[in-house]
Amino acid sequence: MSYRFDSFLFDPKRGLFDAGTPVPLEPQVFDLLSYLLENRDRVVTRDELIDRIWDGRIVSEAALSTQIRAVRRALGDDRTQQKYVRTHPKRGFQFVAEVAHLDDVECESATRQSRPSRRKRVIPMAFVALAVVLATVIGGWWMERDEAADPGPAPKLSIAVMPFENLSGDADQDYFADAFTEDLITDLSRIRDAFVIARRTSFTYREKPTDTKTVAAELGVRYVLEGSVRRSGNEVRINAQLIDGQTNSHIWSDRFDRQLTDVFSVQSDVTGQIASVLKAELREADRRRQGPPESLEAWDYALQGNVLLFNPRSLKDFQDAKVLLEKAVTLDPKIASAWSGLAFVHFAASTRPIPGVSVPDSKNLSLEAAQRSVSLDPKNAEGHWMIGVGYARNGQTELAWASCQTAMELNPNNDCAYVCAGLTKMAMGRPAEALPHFQHSLRLNPRFRPFTKYKYMGLAYLQSGQDAEAITVLNRALAGSPNDPFANFTLSSALALSGRIDEARAALRRFNALSDDKTTTIAMLRTRLSWMGPRIDRVLKGLRLAGMPEE
Image (cartoon, rainbow, N blue to C red):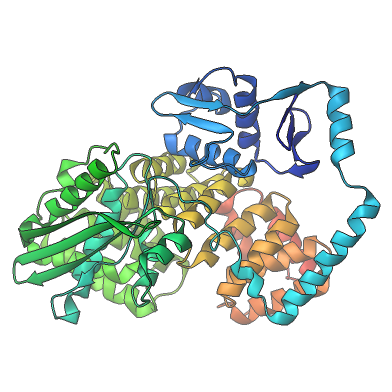
């Protein structure tokens, strides 16, 4: 039995079609849509969906929410319209569009009739070819029109926090305002079902005078929070205001005068008041995160070190951050944020040579620092995703997945948590399931180094056998970072597997020119990339075709 609704036809045997055109669905998204259609006469609980789609495995609500969003995207729906899939708060989900049944013969006839003839497709394909040529001549401007540039309709509960302005009259205090902004973004993620833009994307607006309506439109959010911080000795004044990005009207504002040791409570107060104004539910915070540190000097070092890691521009930023964070944990070893910062420093040092930081054991130092951070603050999402990546790189994929899920549950707006989930799915040999996580990470943090997500998406597509899709997103990655070795060798493989050998060899030459190694071989890459799952062999197959030597 198949289902027709609006221009869509869903056949459990053949898939989803929109006006006769196949709509690609990941396996879990396919199963989820099928189950919602089968049970459209009732509300299906979250537990029932998890039991059905994940066979009773323990997964987070964030994982289910990701798949629900994927179903809506495939249908051109979203959380605001809920034209097809409706959320019933605290109950579950229901397919609500009017549906007609088709038997197998009617289904085949419907898809055949609505599918354009081969003759009719000649002209559109000619236009596609012409578009590609024009894009190449113009210089690739079309690459800006991607997921990052088109966020879609703003979810009802969506917020971007602009960098709070430092009004202290001392540029050396910028780090304090930045750190406060970062903590506030994390705290706002306690608002249940809120979509909060990641800090690195928000911070791209720091030096760009932009009105609130433009920010909201560009990031696809409803609300914008902005404010200022003035620090004088041990006294802090914080002003904050929440603005409706669609109407440019002020919804809420307040001023807080506190002692430095009490600045933690301001974040909680702001978050609580915003949740109240928006009539939203607030998840309970870990009380250990709200108290002042034992050493203000150590806490200040931790703030300075972590701010350097918000957007590291050079290897020196990692080197300086390591010095500051090590000072912090020496003075007060109970500062969880300092340990999570050190975990990130050692992680970076394990992926590229950083003089004075990289050591043979950097990978394990990163994992140990992340574990120390979580032991001090179990609700620190940063620490959990770092643990997840550490486990994945060590081949402990089940432990890695549990840590990634915990990070996504604690902070559903942490883009790195979803990158962790995607990398872990690839390490498990399930690259198709990695893609929605990378895509959602890009939506959360669209303006800060999107090429990183694109290159991982490219690898997932390549491992899944979707070479054309891999080439598209890898070209997007290279448009943003043309000297990225990883993106270049992955593109070389995808081109070779698509039969475009000359282009593959050119991409391989670019990779070799960028590589730290005199000659990179298949054997070397197999050793480095084996943790990314058994399907890395397909990548190596393409590189072999492109001409990379075996030994």
